Length: 253
Image 1: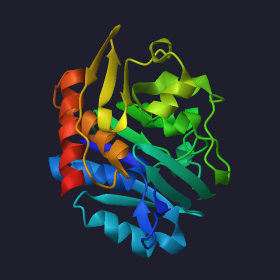
Image 2: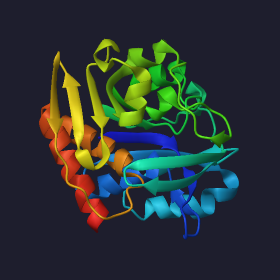
Image 3: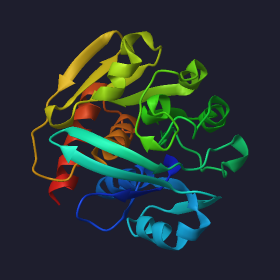
């Protein structure tokens, strides 16, 4: 059983109406493609529940809604693999008391949209009895409204609980030497150029192919597909190759 935990977002892309986003939504798209037992725990403002939760539930994975007071909101644009983001609103921070009971399982993927959402104490509560995967947005995204900023002013205790850390290329540049983080597995995604996996003192690049498609949520889907593959016994490079294939199938569908 895989658990996926995080906040929804409301995303604005050029020429489109606002849409549901966030790691819980895009990660659930990967779960739908992989058809594995899973649970999603998602949060947003109560006012958005009636729109966001049904959209997520239609993907087929059981959803537990956690009441929130705010919904994260972003304006997103792309130039090739380069993404520009404006933060218009921040989502809720999670405390250990906000976490509902989770069914037994070996892995949980935590999908923060900003650094304030999952502090070390909350991750420690989630880690009891399971391995944690974390999206690096929860390390380096500065929790403020305005143009998205990244910095390395994160609490190192956050990493104590983490088995897999997924970083976008620009996030890895902020963090520095990923081999020095003390995390068992680090995966750095590099857009259409693929990803690089670091584990056990080794590293391997996994190729991808450019696709003419909206890449929003590709990193979230990759992270969840990677965790599902590791849970199934795939070694890290093979898990990254499988995750790459899952993302490609989602982008062209």
